[in-house]
Length: 236
Length: 236
Image (cartoon, rainbow over all chains, first blue to last red; front, side, top):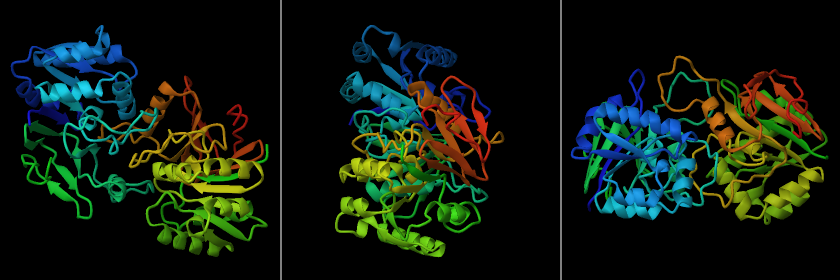
């Protein structure tokens, strides 16, 4: 299986600049690439988002084109060496990909070697569905099916329950348990600062924050930084 | 317009029993009613949920039948004096109503005088859409369109932003602003402990927690307990 993915929980951690916490990982992931194709669809103001991403990637030594500035999004994807799919609203992102006929293009190009990096909604997009997003369903995508570049679900911005909270809304863990009342796919709760590096059949947890793995009918499991996920998630 | 609604932000506030914070409002709302029809579809274990609700309503002096225990859900709705739609997962609740053909029955019966009470997901259900839910999209309903018993959106379990938080996920206010990037409908953020009493064209904020009103292109507005909403939201 040819696939090269870098999936960040968040684009910005507390107290650091945009992508700063993932700078080394991104540089390593994009070695040999000169320009990155940016996908800003998760935010409303695509121009402002592309400008921010352009500045961030320039600081890492990469040029950036935004897919919304190209004559044909599909053609831009066909010609790209690497994409970075930015965070924002996951429903808006998926709807835009589906309505522009880009889902199949993404799948085929990633199989053919296109490097796929994403943060938050952009990481969720690599999963089988968007069903583990934290976002508000502000628009309705035709389908909840996402790109399916990996075989399990990511929950970005994963937060552990706060035992001192007086809020009666569901904790993140409760929400993921509800997901498993209706679905079988394992869910990896990626804490902010955590990221996944996928290379072919290898899946490794990077960053410094660790993750929490939820499998249907089993107690949640702590996954330390550096762990291999393919041993934990069959068919990852 | 004949409609009688009582919409709670939550079924349980911190440190109180199930429905205890709304006991007086519920008793007043259900005056003259002997039995309540309970809708447990937002949770997976309907039997357990119905048992909990039956105990809660017994404490208020009302009998309770659960719609999932009836031979025909539609027929049960036709014969009911009052319904209580329990909280849980909003996507699951809406999908069940849609797939069982109950949306139109609810609309017609509420127009004809059926008293509709709900909490959390059950309150969101009374809105035009589910687009302001906080829940995880664990199942895909055929449509995001909900019952439309009121003309604006409720965000249940509304929480003010925590200025000390180091979490980089979106605050509730940010999520509602994103909603208004794509939609025009006003959103009432109902804090836990707040509830709405709708009687014909009258809409009053009850409970003790207050609410926050978000209108597209305008700064958010604090709504104190006791305020009339129909003056704030045209066509409420």
